Image (cartoon, rainbow, N blue to C red; front, side, top):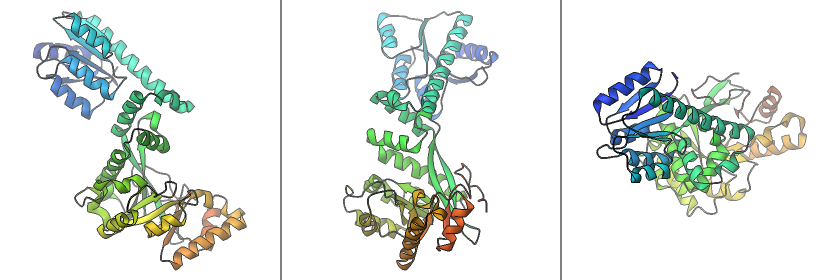
Length: 380
């Protein structure tokens, strides 16, 4: 059980020590909280496989702790202990899904058995989520709004950024990296699923802020420019324009990518908003050119510094003369307008060479490097 994290909450210091020692002897990774308030703080910062808590504690009771945990996580098992059992707390324990309701004094072996079983059920719940994600059957599990909310919370807690290099060719030089959102939550591991959940829950601005804050925390170690994706609705979030926001401090190194897949029709004063971002030092890119429907409207409103050609335009470019002619026309027109073009999804040397021949020198794709957690050195 060495990989099993247990949170133990009890205001009785003597019992805390006895229980903690006993579970550690069994190989549990035990963290202790002297009351429910401390336990809540720890639950906000860490994840646990099981929680063992007394009911009668000052400030925040075990029942209140159970209720708070259930609002953000449907799976973590809570084992309640009490020296003064009564019908009210027993009913509340059932209502909020406590794993067990134990009456003190409880035999140590029985307590260990209950907590081991609770942790095993938690692992089973996690494996079920992973299996559903693997089989692509997330929709049924996420149909319930409460489940979706809790899953989204876990996804936010597990949010991290991967970085894929963008290179200059044929100079074989690094231009920058694109920051790509990832999460350790298996049900929302695919970015479209994560963004779709945020849309359903009307929490896109919250997701956008979390992404930008995580990029800002790492940008100090980044070589070159950093490309950050923003949803069209992010343009309506005042936090994006806050000069004291973490990412704003690095604006001159940041390119904000607005996807062409999402139209700007619902963004009030889009042109004015984008101009404000430019004055702050941000550069603007139109992402996924060729994959969306925004067309001329996105260029007129954004007047971007950079366009990114969708991988659908790049794939097999060397084998399709018509596609090659189209991409060449886009690249040369962008150059005439003073707009840089980045080709996404470059996977083969043949695609790279075809892009070089038509004058597209900024390239991104698996040929040069996959999205990774650290800033990787591109392959040339």
